Image (cartoon, rainbow, N blue to C red; front, side):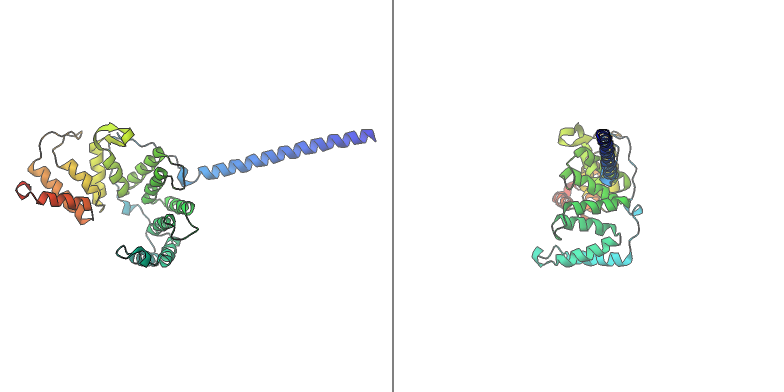
Length: 286
């Protein structure tokens, strides 16, 4: 009996050890799979670091990169936009209907609706949906290759929306968005690189040639705010490296005023203000 008990005890020990090893292995496998799943999320895409001194920039048009939208989805999206009329008091807007229509359009992969729905979630227009649901929508749009979704992810990283704040990742996503054709990202980075010296701690760098190309490409796509930064770069004659090489001329001022006018056309309020200042000095107009 003693020998039998000893054998049973040893067998139990072996079985328990095997079970423990299996559980540890299984737990590791599950944890590893979860880690892989998290790493595969678009928010964790490995991107090149932002390079403020890049030697060149190629203008890409966002409209040529996005997928076509469903006609019915677009109708719902436009109806939602009409209801979200900023001429109305906020309490007079039917946000339940706005969310419903926007979600219907988003469900059909209308990329603008997807990003708008994310904003509605962040504004707490459809509780309990919030930051994480907004983040998921942006990631869905990223999987569709939407440049604006990469721009939005950069903003989320900068403002700690659903992710841990990380300026390095934010600029990397903005850079990718600009390279993909997003005019908002181009205007933002162009403004950041339009300085005459580097000051990373303050968030600006000197790369006027590339800044000019980004701002021009952004404005060409109808993004008015790009005109405001571009106007200052065009107002003086510059060398190839962006350095000012003389006083304002008839040609440079004419180009700058044309840029301001284009910005006003696309809704740039700062452009309208500066253009009105220029028109108060008629003798100095180009």
